[in-house]
Image (cartoon, rainbow over all chains, first blue to last red; front, side, top):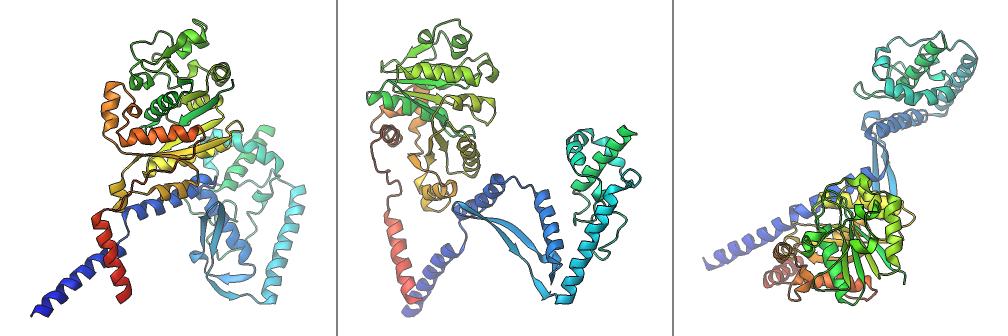
Length: 200
Length: 270
């Protein structure tokens, strides 16, 4: 009888301290949340840009690897003074040599096609869905400079369907942006449209 | 003589910038230095209240800038300490009444006659902050162990690092509550220092005496018995170059010792 009481008491005490150890304290929660927030504050990378970077990385890496695109994780991490980009990719399998060469050849062909197009009819190929153009005059003025430097190469890509099986942005055919994030190339090319209008 | 110009800033409002300015200034003067404090919070001045000088202000910094008086005429002497004086902010104007260049100029002039020029910075990161920082070469970043204050302090540190004129900055951790730190409900001093990776100049414990001292217009550093007062005095000594150990606020209570003992026991049995 007596032993039982002591055993019970001991277990209760043990339970009390264990609980205190296991539960994450308010202080730890605060520290962890702060670390994440400060990491974002310290870089100029907006969530949109990170998403875009993710899309471009997927495109680049999928030439060499077959991977789970949805599960690709991209995070910024800080250890002391040093900031690190943590990339976690579940690889399904490595592509074989032939596949890689095919992908590279496709890319080269694409680049060649662009070069030829650049000399030609940049004004004639007009993207169809640019209702938004006149709604954002401020953005247009920002993108004008960029458009001047970069000839209309991105617009020409439109008719070329290279990645039919991917869910890709309808505006630039490159990034895998969702609908609510506005593609930057679209903004660029809308700048081009305005320019050509002015010119004509 | 070439005095040191130190800006006291925080980003977030309400963390104790003005209280820190009043106390550090008073403490430095008590140590025998000639000190002038500049309130740059135009339109929301309060440093005069904390020092109990609100009835003595005739001219403000805007009067100096707009040449309605000489710089010396606008300096209000402290009631107790003739080594200490205040250049008050204008209450009826906004932050645009003084420019960065003008503040820099005032600091340069004051440097000749004073050992320390403390600039009390307004909250925020806009023009008021830019003005206050313009003449300074050192900074004290005031923060509290709360998430929003630490985040804003990080932002301020980023801005200070981008300024070439600012040679050094140090952290003043205000309103520390040892009991909450002990129960792991509040970030500890080490946590904040690690997250911001900045040097510390002082730790000020939460002290209800601050409220009464503000009400009386008498900086708490004049009360030698108060813990916060002594902490501010230590900050002033560190500014002058003395090496003083940080107060140990987290003294171990009986309960903590018992808990530690039991934890030790458990560790062996598991």
